[in-house]
Image 1: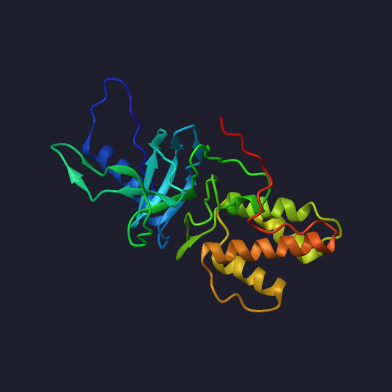
Image 2: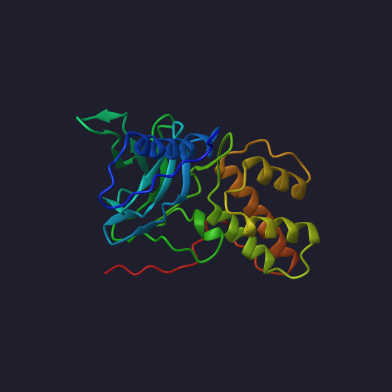
Length: 258
């Protein structure tokens, strides 16, 4: 029994039905079987950047309602200062058809309402008049700065049976923890695991580490709760090393408005 068939395309060869079926089977295996049981969220890429007036979603893949979707080129959306929390979401349409294709469409929208049932959150921010949106961070704590900063903490990254924190966030945590002196071996091992992972760390894994480190069960496992748990651990490690204990919301940057 054949378990793999890859069509070979050559000049002057007839395009046969079996070749198209092989392509369809390959796509099915990639999308349906490899990520079977995954929750909605980002699979890879989808880095966010910003210009003076637009948020840009770069190339990547997302998983939504049992299907993987490829974002082949950057897409952007204009943003405006509102002094209120604005959420950027990615929406994927229901299947559409024309005479030769079955397809879906993607759209980016900014909303001030957190509609949990719809779309995939990419980021949120609260922009002040005259300010420019930042997408680079000074340190791990800077990711939760309230104003004028792209916050990707709430963005779901697809994992088995659900979603989790961005691997960019967990790797940033691991790097800052490993910069501490006299770090216990258990922390070193956990941080090395975070740095070596190709996929996001599952919520259960992060929650178990936070619970072990703090000596009590972590009751909530939302992205925000996990991030705040990592913040507490990093601050405690910094205090033990004799570093200054910065409050999470404190701004450590300066903004100039023309």
